[in-house]
Image 1: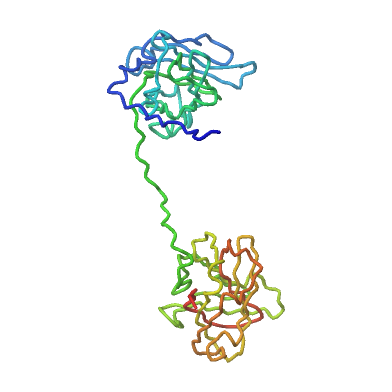
Image 2 (image 1 turned 90 degrees about the vertical axis):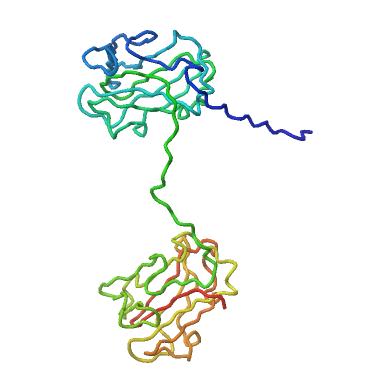
Length: 373
């Protein structure tokens, strides 16, 4: 019977003082010692060029096109340090492969090269030279650094042994023509990341009271204030029970042919809300007045909707929900217990509160909130 199967946590190695105390840092300089793959093939040409240099007398010119028929593989390999076995395990968290590149002509908005580390047992680790490693947005006719962290190499797929590295290979993809110079290991620390989009933490959606409308929708997460042939729904500054604005809803649909005569609001920034724990203690309250006339009920239904677009049993604005039992041209408070909405929806996945308008009418709505009874 196994009583304990844990593994002791291995502390990461400390950052060395100098890379050269661990491994030879220079991979490619001004000559082609320890470089293979220089022979010309149907889809690749590699040669030392003195026409364009970076930090010395020459640079490696690579030109390739993998779309050429019969192109099985294109690339070069560098065994550096006379192909000695190299242990980079202590550098993985602290170093990167730095190379200097430029185009022969024009711009390249990517660098289609897969860097491949190979060990002496045939294991490999791969990293793509994505443009997040560039100094600038594109590779152009000016030299720039491309810095690929060792941490970005996938070493697990083909079981790379970082303690016994044989060589670094450049697998050329797609097509291109570049100069390559000064490939080396350098110390590397990722730049601190600054979030460009910070989402404020969500408040407790069940903490009451929850103001859904007061001079505007909560978090501006409401919809339906539109004007068309069936409706005029907008904000009014001339009538308001609280604050400076109310919702003015005027609509006409005697034939029942209009669609989407509704107003909706989310009180949790459109994240789902689980209301299963509040049905017995919560009510919807709002203030309402008619533009003209007095009515024992209004052709307005209120419902909750879940993220499957299913509506709860709607609550029609009956006389029992309004103070005084009558809807008229004075501001009246409407109170609808949560239990009045019945079932029909997934109460763990509620999306929004809906006001649905039928037939015709003209009302002002203000101070919409969820409260404890």
